[in-house]
Image (cartoon, rainbow over all chains, first blue to last red):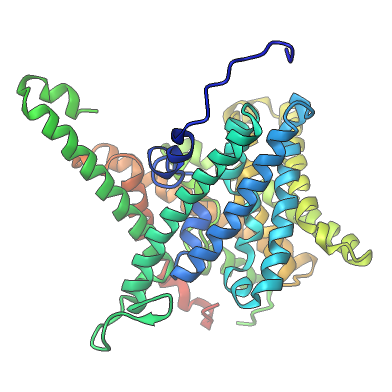
Length: 223
Length: 196
């Protein structure tokens, strides 16, 4: 199999940007929801979590891609998980050394990056099949897409839930904070609201396209 | 109520700090496998079992690791333990109860990446529970997961029959529902006189 030189499609910007928007891990593929909702009660936590996830995602996927011909197919999942767990242990101790405060805020969710389906999913679907450089670029794109989603959630929740952004007061003291936003239900509701907005925008795009052709209206809108 | 008592640990994991709705653990199966009540129920049974097995084993492993000062290996050994526990459950079920095995089928391997299970193992370690407290904690967490996913499946089955706008398709609606469920579960936070 290895002698067969496959012609790989060239490395383009698409590999990088796919993760940002078209295949956004959170909004489109619904991967890695647990940390997305659990730690986005403030923007600071969101950024810390994103940095940790990007580190683990890029590091583990790069290593898996480099070892992809050496790992036997039958035990690949457990091998991937061990590699991921190693990187998570590194990042856990790193954060503890850099900022104990952030470590306490994120709590067990740093260690739970191991079971973030985003990382294992990308390892299985992308890193095990593609070259080292492409994997790194794609992982960076995915990681930034994940960051984008976390920022989208974290900023809304902190702004409405505390009237602040990164600890700076945005609204005057007359603003009554929506405490529910920083509590667990707020996470679900804000993510739901973002998804509703995206669905609405997509629906409007489709509607504009079919205004020209009224006859096909029924068949498309049922999708 | 004494926060160290077994009944409080169970109730705390079951209702007050429900794993899915308050701690956001195990969301992937919660969204993915909650379309039908039957499958949701079977899934939660399998999860409770794996949770129980892995939490008891994790207690033992942690004792050994602490004895030899190897705490940095904790995460790797826990995840390997869970993967093997799932494999073990799969083999036992296949041998002794083929009917249940067929009913659970594809959901069994998915349990490995359920963060609720790793969460139970990690939390019981960081809270320094003893053996019986760990058992109560894992059973409570499993039951809480089952309750949340079955409730969700029931709601989603009802919604299938109702007339909804187009934009609420797929995950958006599930998230909104989960938010409302989570709000109702916050009502339990006064239970036991402690808001942990």
